[in-house]
Amino acid sequence: MALNFPNSSRSLETEKKRIRFWGYDSAIEITFFMELDALMKISPAAELAETGLLDAFDGALEQIHQVAEKVYRRARERSHVYVLAANEF
Image (cartoon, rainbow, N blue to C red; front, side):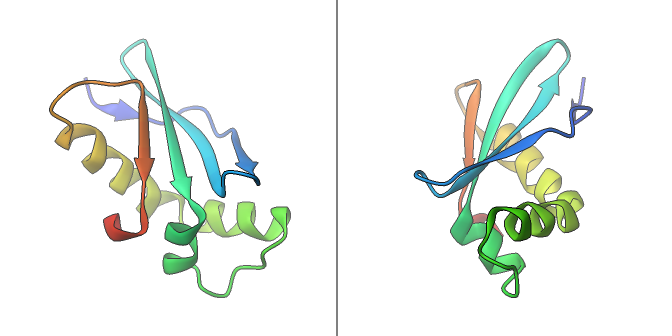
């Protein structure tokens, strides 16, 4: 089954400079973290406040999900946590 993203929840982790979101492979929940450097690479005009960062994330959601799928499929060993770094975009 393909990775899907039915849960639109996401949250900013300010101290760790990343946004957390979730995908699902069948019934298995997969946690993704998008580093803020990666978000700024694809949305350089994003406001740095929480609302601006989450809005930028939402605006690039299709691209983010495509990269998340690529990172997930590329992993040799399955994990339940993946990080999307700037070099992925």
